[in-house]
Image 1 (tube, rainbow, N blue to C red):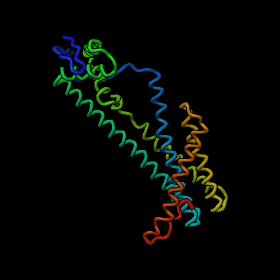
Image 2 (cartoon, rainbow, N blue to C red):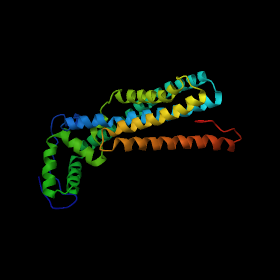
Image 3 (tube, rainbow, N blue to C red):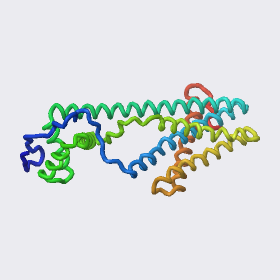
Image 4 (cartoon, rainbow, N blue to C red):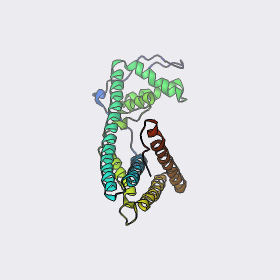
Length: 271
């Protein structure tokens, strides 16, 4: 292969693309226990999102109904219906969102594979340019990419990672673990404020206790999320509580001040 000192597009006179069946290869890289562990740790996103949404959504619903109706049965009906609808919505939304994201990644992989088949020399030069941007010399970059072309699966992986900035493994089918985690965490979070109304207290007492349970639940979510990071669990828990209280306060203010602008009585969201 001809070498060149041109900093951008060295001439390419030969590219190894005759590996049998290379157009059908799946991009891969060596897997490690560390990567698999990190993938599991990243799943905390579904749990944090689901539980926080479940707590805040249901808290506003049950305390609002508790004050407006003054009947425990109305709280249970609205609370459990909200739990069911929210859990199903969150689970289905996570499934469809993940499916759409994987379809986008697969389309990018398919497009890159087609480009490599249609103009392999241009793709070779493009990958050489990427390695030169990483600090390799022209000769080093050409040597690396030349070796990559002899391993089409790794070559495709590197092209997709450098050109699109994505890990091709994101196209893998993640199954239903994420959607189930999202739906289940929402249901668990939604049950936290409902629990206060199961205790033998007055409606006002139950509403106040629901607020306390919500704060404790939000703190527990933040504490749990910090266990897989280098953050202080207490600080993380307080951070989640602060954001949750902010969201609830804004919802309360919106329900109190916006409806009168349209001739409607204030909505008793959160009491």
